[in-house]
Amino acid sequence: MIALALTRHAEARMRQRGLRDRDLALVLDAATPLADDAWLVTDADADREIVRRKREIEQLQRLRGCKVVVSGDAIVTVCHMRPAAGRRALRRGRETR
Image 1 (cartoon, rainbow, N blue to C red):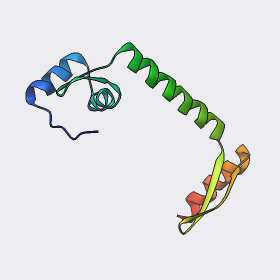
Image 2 (image 1 turned 60 degrees about the vertical axis):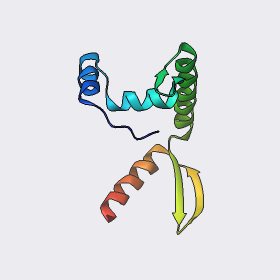
Image 3 (image 1 turned 45 degrees about the horizontal axis):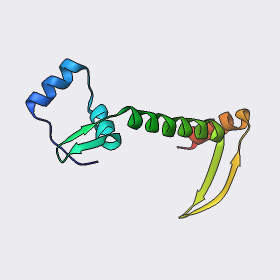
């Protein structure tokens, strides 16, 4: 995303309209450019981004409990852990830090 500064006017309008900084980042990332200085989130833009995020959610659900072990700059192994083993690993990991 482009690094843009907010004017006091824009900050006031954002507060009035219930918009957050991350909302602006999403609009600038996903919207259709109308001109060099304006963007609009169309229905097609919103639908596309919803589908993309739904796929990410499905992927995260599939990867729940996945463990990746790294040594240096190489991935050594990958596995799915049973819930009890995952809880044990989290507990042990916290104990050694």
